[in-house]
Amino acid sequence: MEITPSKKLKRYWRVAVIANIKDESQPKPEGVPSDAFADFDHIETIHHIQNAIESDGHETKFLMADRSLPQTVQEYNPDICFNIAEGLGGDAREAQVPALLEMLEIPYTGSRVLTNAISLDKTLTKRIWRDRRLPVAPFQEFLTGDEPLRPELNFPLFVKPAREGTGMGVDSNAIVKKEGELRERIKWIINSYQQPALVETFLSGREFTVGLMGHADAKLYSRHPEWYDEKDGFHRFPILELDARRSITPRVYGQAAKSKDVGAQGAPDYICPADIDPELEKKLKHFASRAHILLNALDTSRTDIRLDDEGNPRLLEINTLPGLTPDYSDLCLQAKAEGIGYNDLILEILYLGAGRWRLLEPREYIAAPRK
Ligand SMILES: Nc1ncnc2c1ncn2[C@@H]1O[C@H](COP(=O)(O)OP(=O)(O)O)[C@@H](O)[C@H]1O
Ligand SMILES: [Mg+2]
Image (cartoon, rainbow, N blue to C red):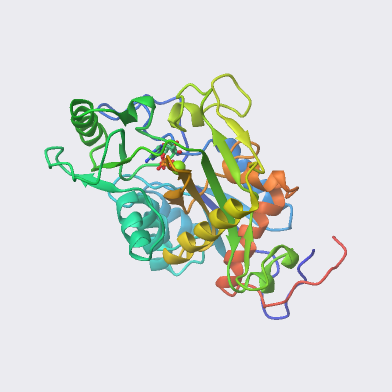
């Protein structure tokens, strides 16, 4: 569906694609963990995003999300930014680019400062969800590693960095069976990743990730209004099951497994749509929407959920900047499984954001021949 030019507003925008890029030619700085920067993007992904946005007539420019950004973004003077930046350092790096763009009053796609700050922090996120009765496994945050273990945490337990992503700091040794292993792993996380360790009950069941996009007014700005729910304006993608049993980090969807191409030796099995009964599907989609709403997430997110020993869903975390590498990132696999092409996925995220920032008139779209 084509969006027709508005009388008042610009039809074609200058779009800055903002990201942090992996630079594999450079050695890692001393003292950082071997999987540091695993969540940064490859430049090819940026090119795919630029091509998708340009396919609808817009102009794009890639801007690196480093200390040059305050200057480069003002020089380029975009109408809107497509933000996928993970940020650099500190306790809320995924909120850095949104914070800068808010200060400069430049529109951007996706969640805003507070949401990206909190969703990076898995402990804070779970405290919010637990307060509103969303199901999470028992958990405890360790700042020093010497704190007494709370009685509700029974072995086996799972230890991970409180504020990372892309499976960083997570491998099969994250599952600990006794006190000594627990303490050792917590201290390793705190020392290597310079942040608190989050300890949770080990969830032994199946793992799913549940992606969605949209907002209450999605139909007014989308190129595909028919995709969005009449009531809440969300589009829920088919659920993806991650079966890591045969991966190089058995039972755990860790960094090493995530870095493998789909179908490669050592990669987990990706099953989409997941083979689950309609009742569980409904529950997972409901929890993911609630998880998104409770954090005030915007435009798109992906919530990771695992089943406990009894088969009850437990929310692990929400990704408010889900990876967007074609044929690789979970969200792209989910979209593809229902026939949504990559360009359409990227353009939806752009138009959902643009609508919120009033870069186009509501209901401006009408079917029109492509130029
Ligand atoms: N409590 C847990 N029990 C079992 N496995 C877990 C638990 N927490 C995380 N995992 C495993 O570790 C992976 C990464 O954890 P997650 O919380 O999703 O962090 P991220 O994806 O940001 O690195 C999950 O996909 C899952 O396989
Ligand atoms: Mg995850």
